[in-house]
Length: 227
Image 1 (tube, rainbow, N blue to C red):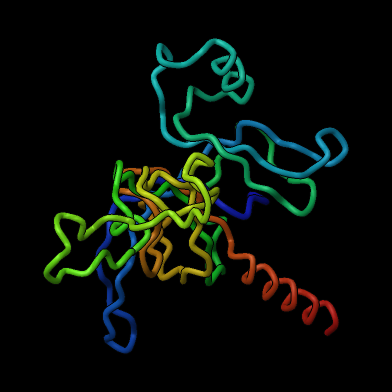
Image 2 (image 1 turned 45 degrees about the vertical axis):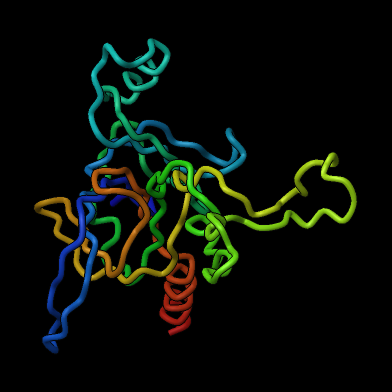
């Protein structure tokens, strides 16, 4: 059994399932793993404990020679998505091992990280939820304008730092905490997570055991040890 507390995957889309009470639950389908362990990091050598995972095959001609050598050390071909999963202790995994969705068996909640959808250059109404200027008589073609910039002196000083203005929206790293893990399908390498996760369909995500879930599991382990 792998010591990893998470897995890499790809967001497939959203659907709905029904629980034991017949209630409908909106879930996100995530194709998770199998991932290849590319590197193992230990506190003695690297200063922290982690396993580096790779997911999704990539063409060798589109991969640099140093990366090809890194993958070959683990007996793996090039991978498209490579991330580290931090651990609290030295991992028992070895380079070349496979990590499947079974690492999340018994876990009730997960944290999912991804890159949000890119929406391009947007105005302040869409980007920051400004209400806009009045839509009454006298306001001519300025309904979705940002208004004054708040400079008390000269505008030559430039725009104040941190001012909410029009600009690029999306493609940000985002993590959603505490999503309920509804179902694990080891045969099809699929996870069903309640609610929405960041990113467009087909984008890569990282699924980790929830931080709050780790606290719960540690408490249960201490109770069992005390008995």
